[in-house]
Image (tube, rainbow, N blue to C red):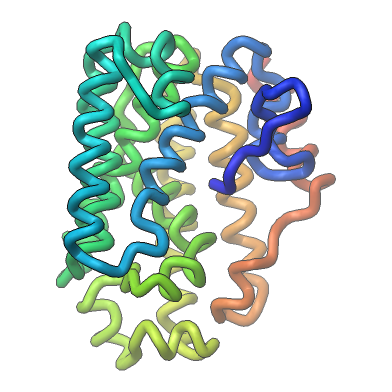
Length: 270
């Protein structure tokens, strides 16, 4: 997720034409504001170690956020984003666990490599299931567990941030994946490793597609979640039609295409 800019009235608004903009297009204003505040807090947690190279500094920042999450549920948050989420998340005690899960994923990804594909998938699933649970809370709905969907959305999100993460020294893919394709993070950054990129896109597309199949068996789910998932799947298809390299991952669907997905989802969701 890109940082959500504020308007002149100091309210959050997703960038016009973005996937988030169209995912929330038909969401009620109050719930839309809740989602934007929660997403901004999640984004803050995810980026808290951006640019941090020293292990000791990273540990201090992670420790501070552990304490800040506790303060949120004690009614004494200090950070602007936790203050904005106090009335949304603090009444739901389970939200503490989900925020800590997001923070833990950030810490483990930045401070340790992942040896196997299975371990990487588990970390992504736990991280993004926590994010989905927080979004259900923001939308005032009972959380539901969709492990495959969480994995697919997590893989898609990491592909969108791939260049940024690699430049910060985050390996992103497992040691097993790099060995399987006889490549390195530097190779990926240089525009090589097409087989690894193609595999990662296919994995994300497959998990999102299965996740959508799981969603089709449920009723009363947030329209915004279904829209976001469909846009993400179409984005993966968009990438698959192009040369599998890191530059391809910076391309995106047109706003018109995203609007059509949002409109069709609303029509089918009614």
